[in-house]
Image (cartoon, rainbow, N blue to C red; front, side, top):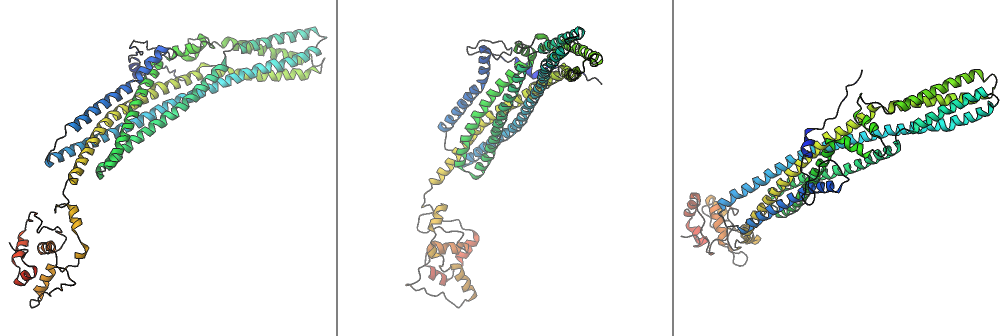
Amino acid sequence: MATARVDYVAPWWTYWLHNFPHFNFFFQSVDNTFKPEEASYQQSIISLACVGAVGLGLSLFVMTVYLVCSCCCRKDVDEDIKRPQTCCVTWAAIITGLIICSAVGVGFYGNSETNDGVYQLTYSLYNANHTLGGINNLVIGSVGNVETGLNQHLERLDEIFSTRSDYLQALRFMQLMVNNVIRELTALPGIDKTNVDLAAIADQTAFIEYYRWLIYLLLLILDLVICLAMCLAMARYSQCLLITIMGFVVLSLILSWASLGAGTATAVVTSDFCVSPDKFIVNQTKDFLTADVAHYYLFCSPNLPNPFQQSLTICQRSLTTMQIQIQGLLQFSVPVFPTAERDLLGIQRLLNSTEFSLHQLTALLDCRGLHKDYLDALMGVCYDGVEGLLYLSLFSLLAACALSAMLCAIFRVWTLMGSREKEYDDIDEEDPFNPQARRLSYNPRRSNTHSFCSFTSSLGSQATLHPPTPSASNVMPPPEYMNQSMLFGGTPRYENVPLIGRGSPPPSYSPSMRTTYLSMTEAQIRHFGTDFQV
């Protein structure tokens, strides 16, 4: 069953990229035809790659203006205003992180698509290289068999049949057929150069693609790590981690804009080739392939004649004629010249092997095999490859813009954290409401001081007993602030700050604390003195 013929049609996005303006270094319009060897076209591609540098400069300028305005226009704001501002900045950083994660997903897809397209290209090149290598080997093997093997046998038969002019005439005719086969086989296109070029292109393309895929993979992982580290730094309020993240954000920002420029230039160059690949290939192969041979493989149309058909037909007829001559000589000359049988059978074997190689060569020279490899290569590059480059360019653009916003948000969060730490540092260490002063005011020697609450509870259970009089030599008087905290809290953990005699404002008393204070007995007042009297 015959398969339907598939024609190549360039996708719409290649035409869109092909119509991008091409300018040289002097901002002069350049023809967008794919001509990589021309200096003007190379300058236009470099100009397209500089788009990333322009974007990087604009983003750095905008961030610089924002940072300068943020530093110069800072004002002291109330806590009620500062807290919503911190919340807004935090949410802005989180939203930019989510945008980066979405862009990373787009980047992974684009990287995979580009890699698939390039793999299909290299696979088709290697397959075509194998086909051309097989053609080359068949041609060399057939010519070698005819030149060396047949000529040796014909020289020996010429000596054997020296007395028979009719047999010598048959040998001369066979020699003419051998020359025809050699001439037609050597007239085939220069396969050697084509074979080397395809192998070199495939190897170089695979090498470049491996490192391109690896670099993009590392960039995608770096963006993910930046998002995770940012969430961790904001959760832990770590200024050192935020500073480290800002450094990596700047690095990723530079790489994103660079990848945008490189990806855009590569996509445009590839689209210029994909719009009209046949013309470029014909121009590149004109030194060793004729135009009819190039068109035969590029289009593989039934209306185009096979340029090898005439040569293959001549070779086939020559081999068939030699087979007939050998059959006649085996039938009539062997009874007269028995020694000629060995050489005649050797010629017959060589003719059979050469004819078999000629059939293989005819199948390999057919346009359908190489044309299929050509179409597969174009589909891989112009469809999957260029599409993947577009997704990678979209990733680079989204990541660059989001990283710029993230850098501004992280810097704002860092300044707010710094202002909060500064407010904490401005607190007087002598302030009793400072937590640090509370820790410093604690003395382990006072942990065993007799508790007022425990003493009052013992008074409640043993009303007749009075508190023992402490000895002045070995017992220190209980501190006033400890007595006050024990009185109003029942435990020293509620208030551990010396408030009495320090000029600090009195604490707010709850109703239960006031009831406890008013219920003090005469014995308790004598024991604690007049510290708590109002």
